[in-house]
Amino acid sequence: MHIKNLTSRLKGTLFSGLLPLDRSRFIPELIAGIVMAAIFIPEVMGYAKIAGMPIITGIYTIIIPMAVFVILGSSRHLIVGADSATAAIMFGILVTVAMPGSPVYTSMAFLVAFLCGILLVLAWVFKLGFIGDFLSRTALVGFLTGVGIQVSISQLGAMFGLTTTGIDSIPRILSFLSNLSQTNLYTLAISVGVLLVIIITGRINRKIPGALIAVAGTILLSFFYDFTQMGVSLVGSVPSGIPSLMVPSFQSLDFYVLFTTVMACFIVIIAQSVATSRAYSVKCSDELDENKDVLGLGLSNILAGLTGSFVVNGSPTKTQIAVDAGARSQLATLVTAAVVIVVVIFFTEPVSLLPNATLAAIVFLIGLEMVDITSLKAIYREMPAEFVLAIITFMTVVLAGVLWGVIVSVIISLILHLSHSYRPNNSILIRNEKGEWAYIPVILGVYTEEGLIVYRFNRDLYYANAEKLMKEVIKIVKNSDPPLEWLILDSGGFTGVDYTSVQMLKELKVKLDEMNVVLVMTTVFPSLRRQFERSGFMKILGKENLYGGVNDAINAFENRK
Image 1: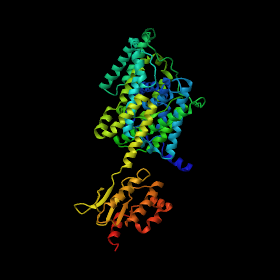
Image 2: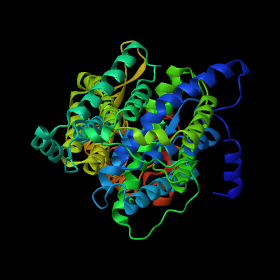
Image 3: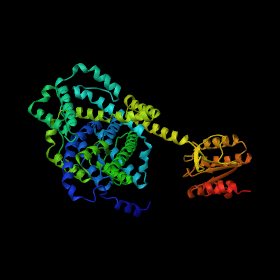
Image 4: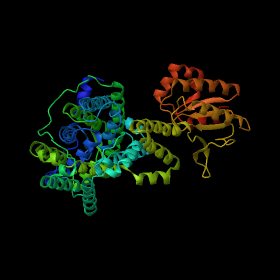
């Protein structure tokens, strides 16, 4: 692709989610931005804990990365920042080779964000935003539910004031239960109090920043009472100031683990962000360019990696919070970023007094919110077979960890895709009771008219289902009485074919010739015709057996004598 074309695409990209500005909306957007900041700050602190990163790195995700998406993204509603899914994926894989919070771990986390950004920009260059479609909703629901359970389980120790061991859920539960007698009652009381504050305020009004109230309240209690004397652990020193540019180090890193983490986050970012953008563009009747959003996410992640932060994602939770707060454009997002800058410059010192139990309780609830019971019920009701696949994905994450959960999610998504493309419901054209042409499912012995069958294969033709087409056509011909004269293959469902399919069509032509049946093709797109010409199939078929449309072919059959 020429640089000039990329430049023109980029020029039409800037501030799509912000412009045109509606002056009458300025005050509501300002208020929404302040409310969003109040809710997002404790939330991203929790995500930093999930990711195994310093708290300040979570706060950094809602400054520069968020602002970059405002400039380059197209969605007026999608909010970009730290997200529970990608944070859990990153932790679940990186923790296998490095201690969370260690220099090696943080270097890998910065690189994951940077390299994810590079992949996302390449996806924009080559218009690959559709990749997200290949992670099925069924697999994603099961995966995120499993991640939610794992995240919640991981916080039980900190909520009870215990030190637990293990990476995956079962070892953590066993460690938690074996140490339960050592529970610190002060820590548990803080955790329960935080849970009650967040749940009660949420029931009253979702706009009330319950998590912020809990954070501020426990910091005040920590200020007036010496929690450390009670055995309650605190967050400790948090650096102040805006993030500065840095270059992630590639030294002493496990590149296999790094690559695996990047690819897993890349897939989930595209799938989750595109799905969220689509949902809110429909809900709010806005225009959307998915590839622009991919570019915005790419640059946001690159800047996250270069400013001491970790991978960012289009967050459905943050997006819903923004909409509930009254945000109708990305102006509110800029206000949020500005408020957070003020906080990191002037108000990080009090955060050092925050009990770890407060963050653990917040993260515990975040995990529970990821458990999508509503969607699981809908899948069970509408697609019982897919429900089993969702449960398999969910159980894989819980029992085997996030990495295997990602692998199983992708495999299940491919299985679902292949099951739909491999077993198409093919059709035969007949006249219905009104005398009109209509396609019906294949029934042996049914003709379009005597001596003629119009057969349509209702999926793209490729190596996995090519043999099915040939077997079904041969079966139709053998079960025709009186004998079939013409078999018209309506190829309107084919946008292209692969090498295996072309070889199959050549073989089908030979077999039909041996059975004294003429193979005719219709509705062949120009690109498909060029493939046939290059492969030599057109010469075998014969141009006289190629028609523009089904009616043309039927008329030729009727007038053949």
